Image 1 (cartoon, rainbow, N blue to C red):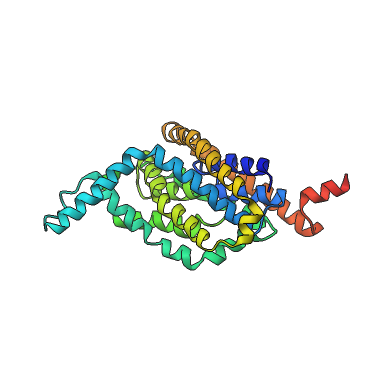
Image 2 (image 1 turned 30 degrees about the vertical axis):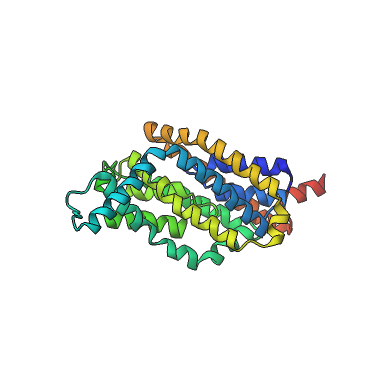
Length: 294
């Protein structure tokens, strides 16, 4: 992998991680057309996720810090026998709901090889199908009755639904993690601001866990195929671009622009399915096909 390809993938990851368009799906397409798919491509994608994870910590540092303080406060109340669920603050409620939302992640671990198979194969047909699923989810979230629930009003059932969307749907390349979880939150009655905030903070353990598990499974060939320098540059660039892209999240929340991403992912899904079918018919990558024809 060249440094230019590493930077381009990092920019793509930083831009698409926070927008509801599926960063994994876009990276899968990029790797497919540039010949960087396979296990090494999957590994590099997860390294780029670490960069955007850094961006999340920086962007939501105040809320994350309050949740950390609330965690210690809650543990202290439990040790003193003074824990009260009825008198909980909004941050305490959000903290517990985030913990509940993390429980479905066990399913992701069980289905890890299943999810990896889609990113590591030589076809993009399924990516197109998953882009259409993203469009359908966001359409449902955009068309539902606008909710007003804040962090202190999230219920366990709703937290579990958002967590299930992240654990079961988001790992599929082409299904947007933010799009699926934000849509799930909106369908559960969250306000748009709460849905976005809950989605991104809930993504921290998911992204961190997935990246760490990949590091433990790291083989010398994967690191050699990508390159240490490319990995470091990729993490830094994806973090920097991710911070800029987070401003787009505020734009989505304030101006209610979900529908534009619905049309984008739907159109992209149709195009990708068409290309995937074409490649299966001709038996080669579309870039290679037209390069050969030229």
